[in-house]
Length: 307
Image (cartoon, rainbow, N blue to C red; front, side):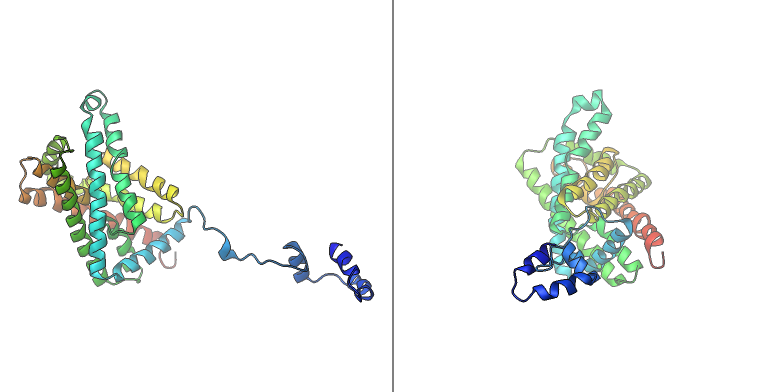
């Protein structure tokens, strides 16, 4: 009606009113009027809509394949630099965890469960979140993402080996750097000495299994965070599984790259050989097993080609 009224004031338009009124509007005209009128139409495209706050599981799987392919094709030098950065992030988180949750002996004696919650809540979650937001390279996450891409034909075994090797080496360098700085800073308490000693004294099989359980949760944190479109969603996705694995006393190889050497620098009676063979090796193998089997293989069976 508004359009007809407007046209009534246009010279020469009146003789066409009856003819226009007697004809039902075409579907395209109706759609145009619904979007803002006959004289000015606006088109709303699906691409203009904001992304969902959380992707459905199959879309997260597809995103993991793409992310793994990108990691596998990255130059070795870039992987290494980004891995050094990630090693620093995880080491910061490990040190914070020791300085807060590891410095409440009264609470630990009276309420061990509460002390473990504090240990898990403050530290490693923020370290992993910094890694994910900055695009840094974490070996333990790569065991899941790059492997998923390989299993689905989007990356090569050679690319996987490159990603694993350089991310592991870079994580080690970054972790040792931060451990050295904290040892020189004087802010770390000696409780980390006891932690480092206990980690090396753990039976080999036990360290391996704890490594499996830890990286299962770490990879799920990475997996879930990749499906969130905003910082708050990613933070929640990271916080619960990471705080859980720390509170349960599980073993993460990259975190141990900082904690055990820092304890050694502060006087822990641990040799480099003991650290590597009794802790770092079994924990690393357990971490890799979890990323490959519990995440990459499992989700490929669920959402892979033809599923």
